[in-house]
Image 1 (tube, chains in turn brown, purple, blue):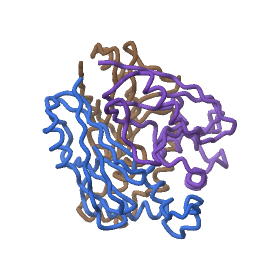
Image 2: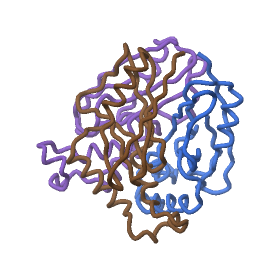
Image 3: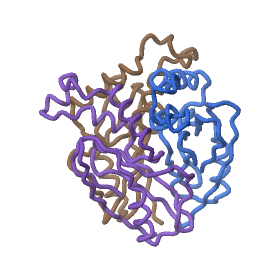
Length: 132
Length: 132
Length: 132
């Protein structure tokens, strides 16, 4: 069995950001030379999510507003995790909602995804994030 | 490494529907002849989810009511994604909650799932959906 | 292709509990002797979730409180699934939020996860749970 692993390093300017990593994932797949198998794409951080959906600015804004509505960042004191001195309990919860990873089938060196399917990563902490 | 890919085409009569695809997935596994490995089952659309849970009518009704409560379809104007002319922003969010795919281990040509574990697909748009 | 499957049996004393299974998963990986590939960790029950996040008591308390807020257990009568005589409709919904499984890449016999990444299982029913 052939395997290939690549780590991406992303720096995002804001505490939360949606980054389209489709091009990087496709490039890594081509680099691997793998024709048949499974691709796993996951963040290396526990407050980030990799997901497949539409890379549309309005939708990302909707995700952000909705996540904040059901899991508000403030007040920080509402979360026991923040008693540790951190203030990202909400980001750990948001990661569970958005999911951690995606697994995609590769056939004949490519994947078949409908138009509009993009790999995105959402980071909730502003820390460097890497995956794949 | 042996691999096998099969696409299912489903037509659902309503905008949102839960479809039990367990039989189709089992049939595809048998067809593949694969004895050991991983099965990935995912929808080809970005407003649909494949998940494993109880195929019980009451539970599906609970999912539907709960999803609608935390992410209402109407009014469409509350979502910026719908400014694009679409009206399915809520379906993109619901897909993130329910998840995209499932990965299941295959041992000796079958999987070991407790009774009640069924592969279901929920579609939120009424479009044709395919997977596996 | 080499494959290895191991079932863990856990008994939790309370209806809902977070259990850190990282040690067991690492032990199983070592036992497998697998150097390159994918590890799938999933619960065998449909009201339980395996996830990767911080194993921090405060965070688990936050998850529990938040899950209960958006999907309250009581009153049982609000869920049609409970008309079957069960009272765990909320646990089936919570499982969808927290996810079912995790897939992790193995390279040179180990995985690279940032500090703080722990495999946890949350059970919502108090039944025996097994996975991996």
